[in-house]
Length: 405
Ligand SMILES: Nc1nc2c(c(=O)[nH]1)N[C@H]1C(S)=C(S)[C@@H](COP(=O)(O)OP(=O)(O)OC[C@H]3O[C@@H](n4cnc5c(N)ncnc54)[C@H](O)[C@@H]3O)O[C@H]1N2
Ligand code: MOO
Image 1: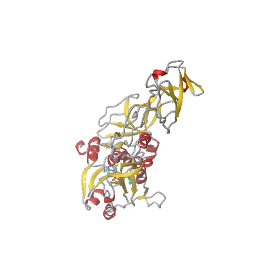
Image 2: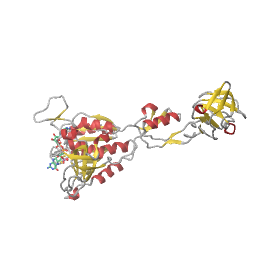
Image 3: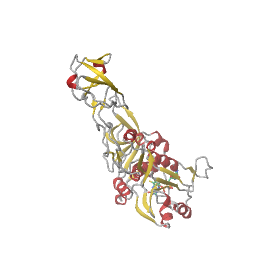
Image 4: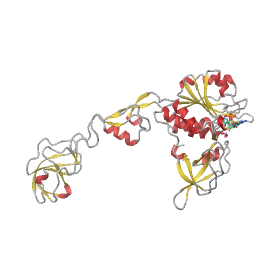
């Protein structure tokens, strides 16, 4: 029945509603890039601190600087060494970019528009009042908020924080995400593989995804399919802002996550989403720690990572936790009508002769196939019951490179 599967948007909304941003920590300016501000950055000075020259030339009184006029040069004002005197009638001060405009002057005569004549300067082109002067506070004023709380800091923001004389930043602590892979059959890459076993790819892939989303991943030892082992690892859950499990989410008798964690006080929020891959996703809480139980199939785990875990990490980091961004692209092939589960088709991206982005979904979309995922550039979204589409139709797609994964 369709009713036992939760729509993707509703599941994401419920996950986000249950999460709050981590506490603030103080970091030095160079460590702030990519972090989210917990408190606004306030300018600790006015920039520029006085009227300054935007050019090399002469500080003059515009009224005196008619074409052909000759002005006496009474001093100089390089950047960092203001001229102490005052520019009087018929006078000028040599000035350089960034130099404070001396008292009395109200315009800058550009060097290229002037001819130096010993201790005087001849005006070749008249200037208008205010020409080439950057007014005090043009960029920002002391006490004003230059960066708001909740902003993810760019390199440009770091420049602004530095210019406004802020050596320290209050940012949200990076969310700490515990990752627990479960299953008797899985072994760490490089370890002996048990008969009928498989190498655990999920924890490593998810750890990389967590890092790309701005979290710190802690990969826990693999827990075999027994209640005590899973419960034992779960006892460490309090150390994390979010515990992610993979495997054991489905309905098989070895699918133990819910029963094993149940003994530890696990409270189920919801289970099973109307999506493919990723249907058996579990959401709940173990004490104070939220738990996201991802399916074991490697592609399902990663697609759920994109759809739910990345927004969850964003939310814990102090951001709203928007859904993954999508683009309108064209499908290279006809797409069949979809069933009740929102689909995420691994697809290769190309550019057609007209410069438009075109996606080609992989022919086989089995959720065990990691090679298809690694080679894909995009996940094409197909809403529940989306109608069949001809080749050339517009579809929405998540571009994986835009997520940094
Ligand atoms: N009767 C039903 N069977 C299944 C259903 C269902 O609704 N009814 N759902 C299927 C779907 S959809 C998925 S997805 C999987 C999810 O199952 P589990 O979360 O319980 O995962 P496991 O059974 O533990 O493993 C599934 C698959 O993935 C491999 N695996 C597990 N962990 C890892 C890992 N860390 N790295 C790489 N691969 C891993 C595991 O060996 C299995 O092959 O259930 C379907 N079944
Ligand atoms: O998601 Mo299962 O997620 O369809 O293989």
